[in-house]
Image (cartoon, rainbow, N blue to C red; front, side, top):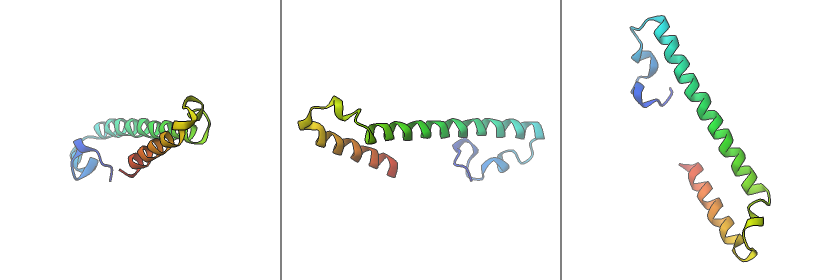
Length: 84
């Protein structure tokens, strides 16, 4: 079941149980748009993380003496975000 707060525990079927077909279709379109937008957002984040972690773009901007610490802080922050 999708975790959509405004639909409550029982999901879209309970919310629109007695609704008409056109209302169900409109709600499904709205939820689909939200899911597609969220998927695009996640793909953007993933690609940005790949660029930063696996290219030299970040390391060129940080002095050599701070690079290891900056990488550890960044990768630790990225790992904790992905675990939550």
